Image 1 (cartoon, helix red, strand yellow):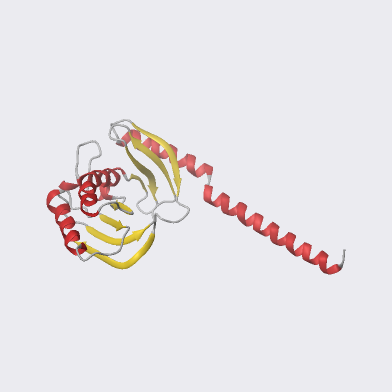
Image 2 (spheres, rainbow, N blue to C red; image 1 turned 45 degrees about the horizontal axis):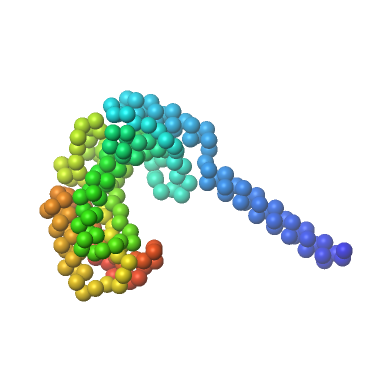
Length: 214
């Protein structure tokens, strides 16, 4: 084996080792810290026992390795067994207290049930449809999770995204205005932002977007 071949094999080996170590570190980073996950589950269970009257169970944990949430890194996944709302329980690093996303998730589900059938009736199949309330909505508006509540009673403003898997049509502006009107008048949403764009399988078809904030 000549010198050049030996050097090539050595360089390849170092690169392979480096890639292997990087892959291992990346995989470990994606999984998170088991001790932190256990810790948040213990904290969440105590919080749930003191906060919710309905049976609520923890079924997992979330490690926010992508930085989607600014106030926590680990959260417990919980479900209210009465209304089957799934939500997060976490320690807010900014407020220094345990919090949850129950009301935000509950109202998102309620609003979707009230408006999605109408939107699909007007537009047909959708590529994407989602509603997002701020995760601290219940805390911000002092909503008691143990009493019946509806988004209709509060000024909380969600973001509603509608993505259509087709090219724009000349009637879309009229349809969009009808949808916004329905959301306000028939679904009873006081404030919010509605966005409608053109996307197919996650890929934009056109840069046209309709948006209304009320």
